[in-house]
Image (cartoon, rainbow, N blue to C red; front, side, top):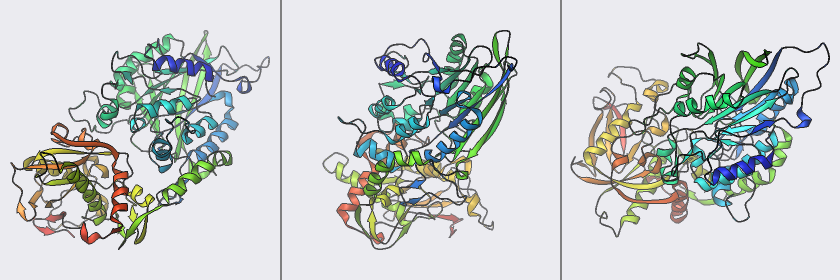
Length: 604
């Protein structure tokens, strides 16, 4: 059940003012309505059970709706999304176990990801003088979350938006490794301890520790630099788990916005790993379970043995967007005046097996309707339909459109500067495998569906040699193929665990990617307007702030001179550009950037 609002708000205010937390939040008990029934004589059992439920990477999904297609969400596996579905699953488990034996937590990335949450961050912001209710706060409060960890995407809209969202919650937003830069004291509560009345012995105290991703310092540098710092997950777990035990926690559950064992994208920019949940479980004693986030993967159960104690730690990651709900089932025993964990198991529940909770649907109906109207406004027309379907392995006009918008914007911004005469190139990547711009009327949601992140635009100065290095790094996305090998599109891309959003093409140049060659030696025929690119020549690269700040660990760009930057989301820049253009003609911006070859022979 949620914390007492008065206690939580008072502690949050003290935290925001910079006061040091002695550790976490005060003990939080279930409300009287959720208390266990009185124990009957002769019925007491030393072994008891309770359940911790967890979501992660909700990314603004409340209803089973896709604002980019303006239709009910569906995919090839017929998954469903949204907190309205999760609410039904949670109610089922609470009915089975009892509210007094059930906790509900989240592992971060809550307020970014759909046009619903964008609307309440930018169009009708919750930071305004008469702020509306945030739809994610409303839904999570109604469902009855007990705690949530910060995710890195919480900071996409800036710290004031995170604070405004935090203020609307009836439960703590945890971040043990989110610290004030000035004194490295906690900027958010590190943990909370919840009391469960299981009907035997004293109340069971469940400590919930929240940890977020150190990459925030890179990815949202413009929003957090000089204000907050984000040290390592393992290091901060080592600091706070003993404090939680000393504060009386019988059970330790970590909600970590960090994957289990994925390769880091930091490179040498940060001394801590990005996905550290596995290392934490292996090296930090006294952790019983970890709700994992960040990697958008489904991990029903992973067992990791702690090297220091020999104890098995149970980890689970539910699929993102509320497609799954992790369920940790604990058995505990009360002996010698103490509670001890005797077993833990985990699994995931599928949200497509239940209907939406009508109470949550009704709660958000007005906000949902408002956003549907917003995304369906017309912004222009397009002469032919544009699809992203083949963007992973072919140069397609829909990606070139992103490059053209960015290049035009930077050229205009630099027109009266010392960089005005340098060639302007632009980086772009396929973010959304289902994006389509239809022939005929183009709506706001079409542009938003193409550029799904809240990135802003920058311009960096690089040499021709550095641009080639950049492209060589991007080309690791592809498998190596001999001239006679069969082409399997399912295995051709995403090599070295490279996500689609880290496959960059560069608009303004022409080049081949030779798949017969090893990584690092694939870029050939690199030209600018038909002439070979001079390695010593200078270029301006229009690039999103995620990449400019080091996201993806691409070479050179993070340290390159800054020619220009602004705070407008690229998505809005695209919408403005399309409105000004009126009619999109792919002949004006599409084609001729890159192609895949094998020893000079085009693959397609």
